[in-house]
Image 1 (cartoon, rainbow, N blue to C red):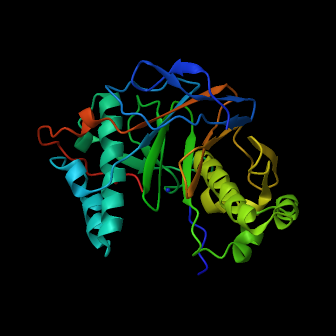
Image 2 (image 1 turned 90 degrees about the vertical axis):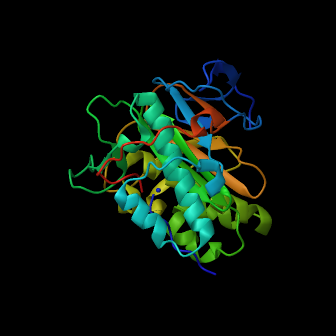
Length: 300
């Protein structure tokens, strides 16, 4: 089956502050390259917000029982959640949107249901593009992704994009290769053995979606106008040939997300970036008092 392009929704690391306020294994990025540590996804205590040069990646548990007692979605989110026909899609949507609200509310000292989000394209000023927290004092950016059994989001103090791709056989990678890969990438990719080429295609795709989520360009920038290093090398932007300019330096990290998946995170900064990863903290999922809901739309 041919899949359409979605719009943008391993070396040991160093020792660095992790999101729980302790130390843990993370990845480092120098310049525009990076690969993320291969340690297991850890449980977390009380998380602390990232500072510039840090990126947190949180994996979310899926299932209504995981989020019982958290009626924090706004009206638009509840309606959208109800429109999903498949229970699996409803569960992924609930995990992503409730989890984002709980963590960002914790970081900002705001009830999760009181958070509001807006869309404002930083390139053209129109009311579309990547959702952002609608608070003047907010300095955090986030990016949500889901694929297969995976639901996760990244949080950083700089523009961030996260993507996870399931290595599915249902996607006709040959049919999509010309839309996803640049000419140089296509030449390299066409010379790979079939099994390697299949994984490499999704590696390119995850890296590019993460990058376009971070920039906020989405499908306005064709993926085949971006050239990256091959997926068997540390992630690095080689060429940005799109008509729309790149916002600034980018740090790319590959993520070890387990068998059957590939993932990447992009952060728009010139700084070294430390990527930490953890399972969503159970302490934030403990049922609390009813939360006041916001009227503004939540994250897509």
